[in-house]
Length: 169
Image (cartoon, rainbow, N blue to C red; front, side):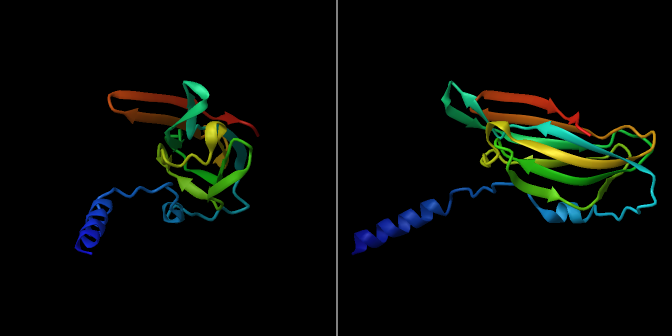
């Protein structure tokens, strides 16, 4: 009995030291503090952009995959105007919606940047995940810039690459 108790206590003490990791950076508080009401009277131009991201990539063969951390950068490229992001939706390889990060307008001040982080352990997007962003900008204002930066490090090896959004509407 003493041996069983000692074994049990050893297992509990070892497992309590294991670092617990979050799977996604989704936190609605990040977006609610940026919420803004856009008047229908505002003369804003509408746009929609597509950004490819990779939560995992193939490694060695089609039977082995490697998880990646994805940082999605949302940037206001105007040095004078505030822009408005209306919606950010994340889709998996099959085009199925995984999550909506915000579905109400948020603002980005001139030259401001905000990010969405997809943890390396969150591979729900797969090898062909993507985002659709809807946005509005004042007339003659530059379009927002959406970039994906994927990376991973293991030991002394590192892997990183970027993707850039394309306007689809």
